[in-house]
Each structure stands twice: as C-alpha cells, then as structure tokens.
Image 1: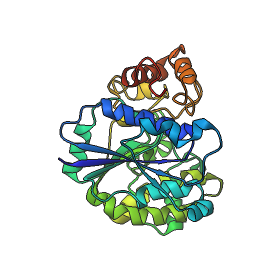
Image 2: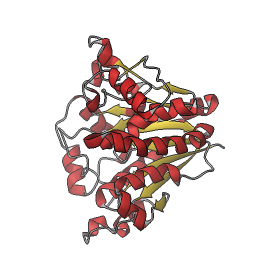
Image 3: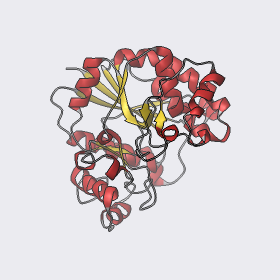
Image 4: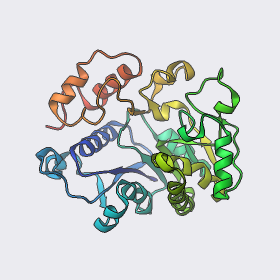
Length: 312
C-alpha cells in the first residue's frame, strides 16, 4: 500500500497543538482504503511558555499517531519560524510515495485518495492557485518577469490565472505563472526529491529580495523552483484548498459543496488560532451565527470533529 506523508510546520504552543490535534482527528475520520497516511510535524524547538495549555503533555493523548521532528535550537534561534517551515521539507521522511504540505490552519473533511492517486500516477506537483498577485507586484504580471530577471531565473509561463481574481479584471492582473497557494500542495515522490534543494535555495534568495514582504518568499519561490527543476505541475480545483472567503463562491461554483480541505485563513468572523484550544472556544465557535464559507466550515468541523469538544 503506498504511503502519503502530510507535512506540517508548527510551534510548541496551544494554538499549534490544537490545530494538529484537529487535523489528526479529522484524518482518522476519512476513508483510507488504498493509501497509508502519516502526519509529520516539524516544530521550532523553543520551549513553550509556562501556560499549561502550551504543554505537550496537555495534548499528548490526541497526537499519539503524529510523528514530531524538532529543529536544532541554535538554527531556530538564528532563523526563527522560517527554520521550521524549511525543515518541514528538509527533514521530511524519505519513505513516502506522495507528500502533501499543509498549513496548520487547514482541515481535511473529505476523502483524499483520488487526488493522491492522480498525483502519484502522473508523478507531478499539484495545488490550488494562489488567490491574488503578490502585494509587492502592484497587481501586474510584469512583477513576475521583473523578479525572474533579478533572480536570473528561467522565464516563467504566465498563462495561468489567480483563483480569486475574476474574469472582469484586466489581463495583466489575472495572469500568473503556476503560483500555488502554499496552504496545501501535493508532490509525487520524484518531484519532491528533485524540488526541495532548488526550492530552499530560491526561498533563501528571495528572502533577501522581498524586503517587507518576506512572508511571501516561500509561496513565490515555488513557480521558480518548478521551472528550474523542469517538473510537471498542474492546478487543482478550489475544493482541495478552499478558503473561508466568500469571494470564492461565485468564482468557483459547486466547489464549496464538495470541499475536501478547508483553509480557514481569514480572521474576520472568528479567531482561527483559538477555536480548537479549549471547550469554551470550541463551543463558542460552533454556536456562532455564520454564513457562506464560514458556515460551511463550521458545519464541516461539527461533522468531522463532533458537536462537543474532543480534546478535554
């Protein structure tokens, strides 16, 4: 049976432990007939605060199936959170047939085996397109070409479209290379092995170029790494990385009802960092009067994790 490794970067605090516990429980609720899943978390090694909720012992019973890797303390102090993000790839297990990088604020809510079969059969990289142009590009495709020139990188095929930019927008704002939202990306084994080195090198190089926008260096590095490594890549429907953002509903009809992975990255309706940390927060979240994508996510949480708090 082929193996899929889900790779999540995290920190040693209640926010991340609770999100990992939620992903782990949701994974166990999915049907697994053809694939063997493994949840692999790479953590920054700084000690947690004295808050009991931040203690690993508080969450131990709910993450027993999870493989944890801790980065070196000296490197974490030097690089900060980027070390745990980069190390998620650098220290990934080498025995998987497909790798899936997940942000901690994602939740699988439906079967994943079909998309894993496809990534494995085509030996490709796949993901959902990023929502908007990188902010430092001034909403223009010219930003990609200018950056490629600065990096002395291969020319990029800018024939793709951002996922939340409508067809009524000017073409120069819509067009992009194959620029995935980093919340969920699928990699066949051979692609993963070939892209990690070039990707990490490009991400570090971009970090120096992007100034105040360094938080985007990981996501922006991907199209350059795909091009440099000459790897096959394709786009997935929104259902595989659906944001709690109502702008997606008219642009991707039918996808919300068939969501496979929610990405609850928007904070307007609730604090995404708290909803799984305690019974009080969980009950408050499930009791909210929500609409649109937030309501769909709330219903999915109730179905996948239960109507009462599962991590007491």
